[in-house]
Amino acid sequence: MTPKKVKEEFLRVDGRAWDELRPLKIESGVLSNADGSAYIEMGKNKIIVGVFGPREVHPKHLSKPHTGVLRCRYHMAPFSTDPRRSPAPSRRDTEITMVMRYALEPAIFLERYPRSSIDIYAEVLQADGGTRCATITASSVALVDAGIPMRDLVAACSTGKYNGRIILDLGDYEDKNGEADVPIAYMPKLEQITLLQMDGILTAEEFEQCISLSIEGCKKIYEVQREAIKKKYVVEKSEKEIEKAEEFIEESRVEDEQ
Amino acid sequence: MSKQAKIQGGIVFPGERLGVVEEFFPGSGLYQKNGVIRSAELGTIRYDPSKRELAVSKINRSLLLPREGMEVYGEVGSVMRHDAMVDVFILDGKLLPSPYTGIIQSLDGNRNMLMEVRNGDIVKAKIINTKNRILQLSIDSSDYGVVYAYCSKCGMFLENHRNRLACPRCGRVERRKISTSYGAEELN
Image (cartoon, rainbow over all chains, first blue to last red; front, side, top):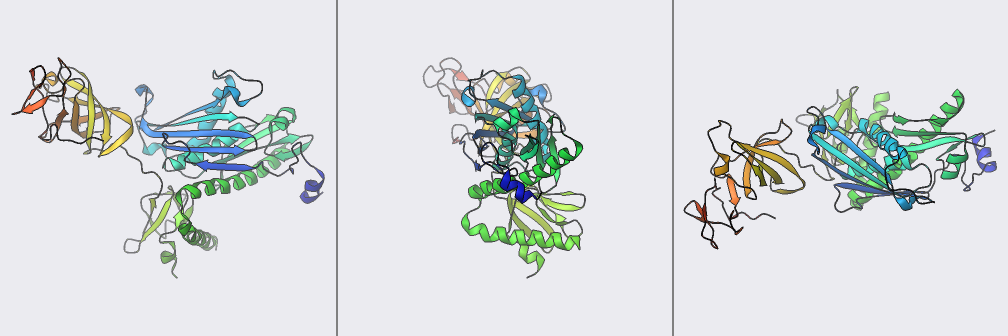
């Protein structure tokens, strides 16, 4: 069965095709008091991220003499889910906070900022499955907005298995009722995975399928991230300059391959 | 058009491949990994043909980090005999979003900091060391020292009369290590 046929026959709970992302919107520089910020809408997910730093570490004993520290906070607003959830940090919040840090750390030159901290605060305003991926995607845009040098942008999305099929970008219903869930964070230019988690049971082939599908999804998300940054920093007259640079990059890549 | 001329002025995103180490010397805003030069910043490409150096000048927010030799302004916190803590809020003429902590020390142990600064004073100082968790500051030069001081009895701004600070309200006279620009600094 070709993927095209599958696409025609198999429609998901929300009417999407198996390899289709939810509508994605990213905006950068939304918070005036943060050094960098971003807002993401991925389907019904609505998340706002603020980045502060590099700045002095408080409490000071957490600072490291040879590198900076990346501190994250993932928090779901009490009104983000139905029914209302407690505003106190849950086990899940603590886990995603850690996961966010692990996913973003490889992309940041922390060693350039010894004795400093970069703080990322993410607040989930509305949740509909896949918030950890959306948070990582938005955080990476906020980090660029804050002017922090990075190895690459980090894009994240999840794949999973629902009703025996591998699908991209799971919604809340698919996440809860599906057989497996594989969130992945990916640096598209460096072609490196920075986060890989798996919940549920998959065969080795299914797992590989999930990875390649996720990577395709991350590449699409990366384009939206770039658009969000371009919208804030690159004025229209610079479009030509971007084209020029892209042309050069492509040319240089082809030359190197030869 | 040559490859070098083409890249001049182009806009790149972090992580973008710009060439290999055999082609260019990586300048600022770049990094190299496995022999490949990539951009670390969002910015425009600059190519210097004489040095064969490629650099990226960033177009997003520039970072303000303390470096040795920078001029700072801060508010004095606790003062002890040999050292005084300072909350640095202006770094290199720019207001910081969050303050850095600094310390002014009597390095030879002969000076009494209690006679030089007091809690609540605004000081102008120079960073002499950034290698510790807090910035080490110096007020040794005549340019540096207290720029605004307040009366420790009534809280009024002290006026400078022949290098002695006098309170115009209660008449109290106090001593500080004052800067030559005492009372004349404009802090935004």
